[in-house]
Amino acid sequence: MSARAASAPDTDAVVLVVNSGSSSLKYQLIEPAAGRTLAAGLVERIGMEDGHLQHRIPADDASFDEAVVVPDHEAAFRVMLGAFAAHGPSLDEHAPIAVGHRVVQGGARFFEPTLVDRLVKINIDELSALAPLHNPANLAGIEAAEHAFPEVPHVAVFDTAFHQTMPPAAYSYAIDRALAAKHRVRRYGFHGTSHAYVSRAAAEFLGRPVEELRQIVLHLGNGASACAVSGGRSVETSMGMTPLEGLVMGTRSGDIDPAVLFHLHRRAGLSVDELDRLLNSESGILGLGGHRDMRDLTHAADAGDADAVLALEVYTHRIRSYIGAYAAQLGRVDAIVFTAGVGENSAIVREWSLAGLEGFGVLLDADRNRERSQAARRISADDSRVEVLVVPTDEEFEIARQTLAVVAPPPVE
Image 1 (cartoon, one colour):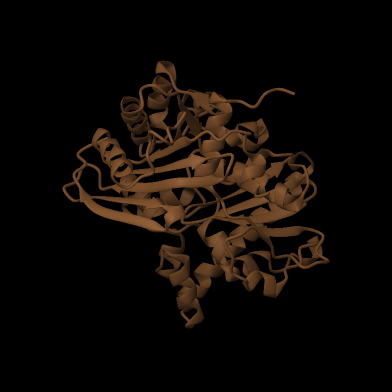
Image 2 (spheres, one colour):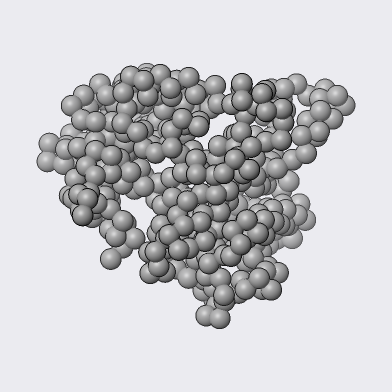
């Protein structure tokens, strides 16, 4: 049985998953129990003159692309509905029983998937102060979806919710506590749906209850985060109040001495907005090595580009540091799990990130590590005390699963 099917409720219900951005609408129509995506699509360049739609039907290996007019999110949903009507599958035959929405920031208020009502929308809007680039767009998508699907429940699934199990010692920053409380300054963490999905799928791959495992999950994509998962619960994560903290990323710096910002303001004259842009958009492997895509950086490093080599070394050095820190927090590590675009596909990142950890019981099998596959797999040596896995993430399926658990929970035995 697949990891998907093993963890889904026993029902053939269909869920529409929506990820609404400021200028894009991603969607998937999913049967969680079967682990099957019936359709997936992207409406992009919302609010611009040259909108674009891509609609895919995986079972038929069919894809449809066309230019569209999408002045706002309401129009984006009309375009999506038109794609289902024109290309299938039929929403009459595969009517969703609920719509699940990705919402980036749930603050300290939302710790589980939540049925959307007026108060929930007010809270999502109010939490936009913590995620001004994301929550307003997520809310616009919810309201547009409610107009398009008025008869079904809508569920908000928060990126931050999985990390609400962190203890205060893990989420608190050492600043004036009254000031922090007033302005809600604390670590929230992100990529929660991915860490939840992958930690559970890793346990299923190993054939062990997730409740007995201590895992370090490394979500390495253009954004990157580490998470210490004990018994299926997040106890520590690398992203903080925003997604900027922690690991080196495609364009984000990750951890940095805060005084660097004061220095650059005073000596280089950089404004707050310029510093924001520097750390979020012009740093990471782009700032160090000149490439934001790990594939391009790796090719440059292979060709002998010293800056690219250093960027790769810094990137993996930071990962290794977090592995060590989280091993100390967990007390024991049963599995280290790589996921997301870089984690699933870059053998050199996995190799360099684990280099030198043999004394901690982490032994990589070089041939397994180099093998390319879209399936969950073991890449550690047979005599490794710590399992090292690659587990493809599926955040949309996790949102569908959590949505279904809210609107059609399995019966209590």
